[in-house]
Amino acid sequence: MRINELILYTLSGAKRMLMPGILDAERPTGYSMPDNVSCPPVSGISGAGCPNGDILSGEAGEILRDMTFLMENYEKVCASQSRPDGIRGLEGTGADRSCGYSREDFRSILFSCMHRILELSVSHGFEGNLWHTYLTFLLANDENAYSTSCEIVGAVEGSINALALHDFAVMKEVFDYEFDPMLRALGTECFSVLLDYHNGNTGSKVFNQRIRNRICDLSKALGEAESTEEFKQRVTQFYREFGVGKLGLHKAFRIEHPEGRKARIVPITKIAHVHLDHLVGYEIAKKKLLDNTKAFVEGRRANNCLLYGDAGTGKSSSIKAILNQYYDQGLRMIEIYKHQFRDLNEVIAQIKNRNYKFIIYMDDLSFEEFETEYKYLKAVIEGGLEKKPENILIYATSNRRHLVRETFRDKADRDEELHTNDTVQEKLSLVSRFGVTIYFGAPDKKEFQQIVKVLARENGIQMPEETLLLEANKWELSHGGLSGRTAQQFIDYLLGCV
Image (cartoon, rainbow, N blue to C red; front, top):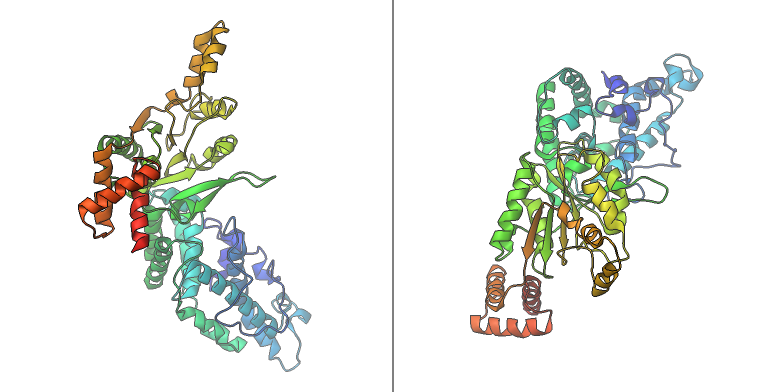
């Protein structure tokens, strides 16, 4: 058996997951022996959970380290326990000395691993063979030299494939590990429950249903792989179709910057599944947005994009729609707020060398006269010494065409300046960095009524057209005027009254 080769499993990240001294049978890092451990119940477990941050350097990675510790050493421990002289491994030398634990200690480690696998699986909505889904979860999340090379683009040429094939051979052996001998030696059958687990609730607290299903499907496919080459091919195909790690499995992200730490990109697991077809009207604006985004995703020249105009006209919904439309072609979106502009360089450094296309999204972008963050944003968009990465664009929405607020007092102040044109250019220089500007105007009465009729039809509202439009007119007079948002709110009101 080559489980000990996982020590050398550097390409796929297992060196971070396994303790370096696994062959010396040292106690697993982070493991504390539970008192009076018994087989944990199938439900109602609490305490472990999925850690935040790097999935392989956290608790999820420690499970593999502890399980391979058991696989390598359970025979030695159980054999020493059955010796007639009663000498435990700690009192021997060589291989015996490497295992200073009793059979009950190993049972406790096994139950601890079972507890953590079950906790992770419940939080992610996994079912079936949880050992397989757990290992698949690690493969889908491990960002390493091979997986990041294959993300979105598929299999790559070069010597890295030989190294990857070795690693996949080791991983397949762990995947296909036969647990029955170990469970008999340790006198427990509890772990077998995880090998055919039925989850009453397949919902996920961490992933959305789409991502959960992809990992479960890959797990089944890897379990059916008959060779290492087939195992490698199926994982590589997953990397090509969906990517790897948080950037591959998720569509949208936000920025968090804990005090005293670096800014980090955090997945948004619940996003609106809107499509441009749901936005009634605005055909010219939608085409302009689609053309620019399509060029970007296909690797052609594209521009930063500003969507401006009246409130409630579908600017933000259009941005969300293009993400849903082009996600499967490698498009990802990172939402950033005005107070986070100082983190932009750090965020760009984290994503500029990945194979995905990133849109940095700024919603409701505008600046008051006393806010100077726009000057920092100008330098980030264009103007710095570093070349702008080709896989990053900035899309913003705003109710203001020129983004920076101007007043008549500004005009009076400029009368006192010697170079008034310089001040004007300073105010306008931010918006000029958006090569594509798209206007979303408020609909007129006829367009508003058309929006209402389409939304009512899509939502199955059965009401005479004359009555529907009369009620819609009453609604818009007291709820924000003519806009697509007002029409949607009216439809939601009707649905709530049914």
